[in-house]
Structure formats: structure tokens, C-alpha cells
Image (cartoon, rainbow, N blue to C red; front, side, top):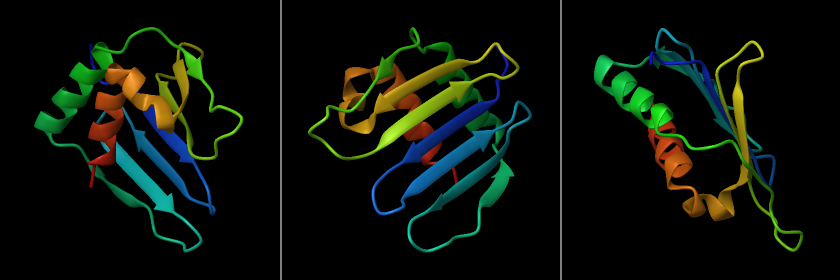
Length: 114
């Protein structure tokens, strides 16, 4: 399966945010920051990294929503695979990401994009 559009977004405390977007052609944008502003990083995935991310996307299990427990604070993330009404959207609390190794592996790979 070719690389679909991918969007990974995290919203956290103290105005922290991270948005990673990858297009099917391997073009990416990484936009991160907190109370300071940083310019988005742009580039294109090399063939090896693109193939690795494609393989991780292919291994994703069913779509689930996992919210943070009420007594916690922290980071809520959303991973969207695909576009135009055919997307799969995973919402989860990062404190429990280890309970979904398939999502965790893809998220860690996305976070290493530079």
C-alpha cells in the first residue's frame, strides 16, 4: 500500500503543540512549539524512511478513542491516516500509548523526522 496522507497532532500543557504532516509523495512539515514560536521544518522523506513509515501504517490495528482519565493532565494526540472521507482517526492520551504498540511505533517514527 503506498504512503497515505498522515497527520499527527498533539496538544498539551503550557501551550505545547506538535503537528506532523506527511503527504503521499513523502513531503513533510513538522510544526512544534510551546510558549515560543519556531518555524516549521519541511523536507522530503528518503526512500528508506518512507518505506518504514508505510510498513508501520500497514500494521495499524482498529481505530479506537482513548481519552485521558479525568484526574490527569497531559497530552492528547490525534493520528489521522488518509483523507477525503476515507480517513482513519485515532485519538489517544499519550500517557497510555504503550497499550497500543502499533500506534506507539508509528508515532515514535514520526517524531524522529527531521
